[in-house]
Image 1 (cartoon, helix red, strand yellow):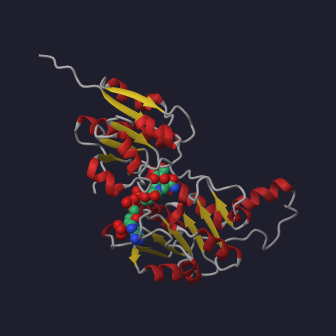
Image 2 (cartoon, rainbow, N blue to C red):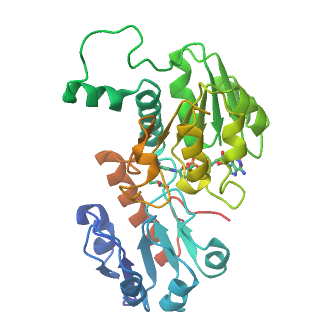
Image 3 (cartoon, protein in one colour):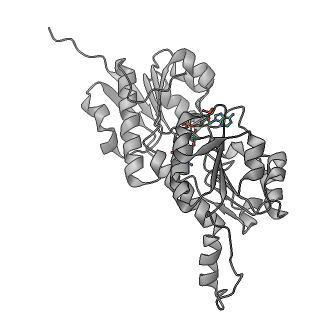
Length: 327
Ligand code: NDP
Ligand code: DGY
């Protein structure tokens, strides 16, 4: 006997290419509504949209807190986020109520590649060079003009040798990096592949020529890169952050950059996002800021969207998710 399947209500918080989400419509069990815009959904609309929903597909720019969970109500079974980071979600409360899907691995290569690009652009002063060519500042070849720092023979320190941190280390090693240090909560056996040396954070910070932050944002890592941290870095050191803006105390970073305490910084993530155009960090030539584009390749974003749709559907159907966040 054929039993009618129950229709589930799904709310999606942003315009995402429909062809990537077709699994939801093909399943024939979802009534999908979405915030059909490229801009973030206002909180009031999010609360309205999620009311009575069984599934929520959200972005890292959506704060998923108890108010949102309460607005969704008891129907809610699954939250699927189009990101690997989950610091925008009140996990302590969420884990008591629903399953969560996320997008690890599929964005690792793109994010590691962008981190290397940002590191090279920052250390070799590419944005400054491009500006000089355009504004007539390029008068002739000069021995010390626009000199920066190279990776060959350097010590690189990776804070958080997880999926992305390891992918960054793998890409940096062939540039002639002499020593690869890393820090985190535990030593990693897989670090042997890059001859990674597990060291205390202080050692990493004081010995590295390049400090690369690729850890998750947690209560322990919030504000980790502060005045004390920058004071321990070499004056010639390059600081790169592609994790989350809140890992860095930006006032302290501004002081470190403007006083010459450290050489330069490259940031793909800031607090807030977008960074206001009059922010002091944007006045500095030795600070390169990108608009959170670590995973932004067409292919990666497409795969992330499909994975988040598959996670959502599995959560609705009570089956195994391709990538479920385990608490
Ligand atoms: P993983 O979970 O694989 O790695 C996270 C790492 O953070 C782990 O190695 C962990 O180390 C480390 N970590 C956790 N707590 C601490 C701590 N107290 N001190 C130092 N390290 C710590 O995640 P991914 O590599 O996949 O992603 C990492 C982060 O990158 C995401 O959470 C996200 O914020 C950011 N990201 C940014 C992107 C961008 O567009 N710029 C794109 C994708 C991700 P340990 O195991 O030792 O605890
Ligand atoms: C993430 O996935 O956490 C990134 O910040 C965006 O891809």
